[in-house]
Length: 189
Image 1 (cartoon, rainbow, N blue to C red):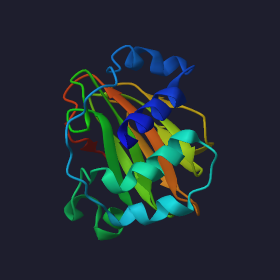
Image 2 (image 1 turned 180 degrees about the horizontal axis):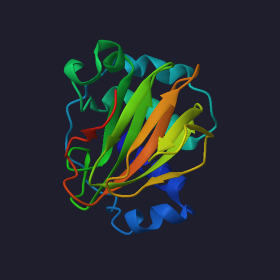
Image 3 (image 1 turned 60 degrees about the horizontal axis):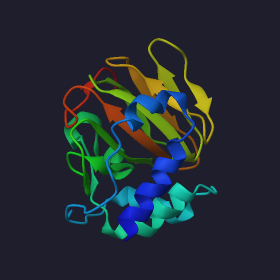
Image 4 (image 1 turned 90 degrees about the horizontal axis):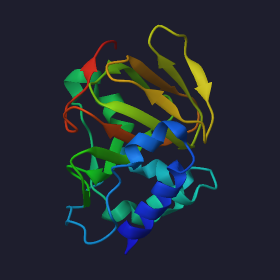
C-alpha cells in the first residue's frame, strides 16, 4: 500500500507544472505493481532529517525501507565520497515497482557538500526539488540556487550539474525519450 500512496503523492507534486505535462501523459495506471528487492544506500541516512512540508517527501520517507535505492556510477567515475552521498530510487519505469517503458519517475538524493559533475543524456528530464536548496547549472550558465518547488527542465543532451550546500537535497525526477536505463555521459569532474 505504501507504493500506491507514494505514487499518488509524487504524481500530485508534478500536477500544474507545464514542463511535466508531456511526461504525465504516459503516467501508468495505479494498480498491481511488480516486486522490487529493497536495498539501502549510505545517502538514505539523510532522509529523516530533511526539512519540508511536501507530502511526496513524507511518502518517500514512509516507503524508503521498501524501496530499491540505486547508483548509476561507480567509484571510478566520481570517487567514493560522491558515492557515499548519492543515490536514487525509481518508482515508475523499467526498474521501479510500477512498470512503464515510455517514462521514468523517481527521487534523487544528494548529501550536503556533494557536487554532481556535469553530465548529459539522451532522455529529456524534469527535476522538482522537494527538500534542500542546491545550485544547478545548465549548459554554459553559472551555477544558480533553485528553491524547493521550482522545476528544472533539461532537454535531451543538455549538459547539467548540481552542487549541494549544507542541507541534503531530495529532488523528484521525470525522464522520457531514448533508453530509460542509459548511463549519463560524464562531461566534467
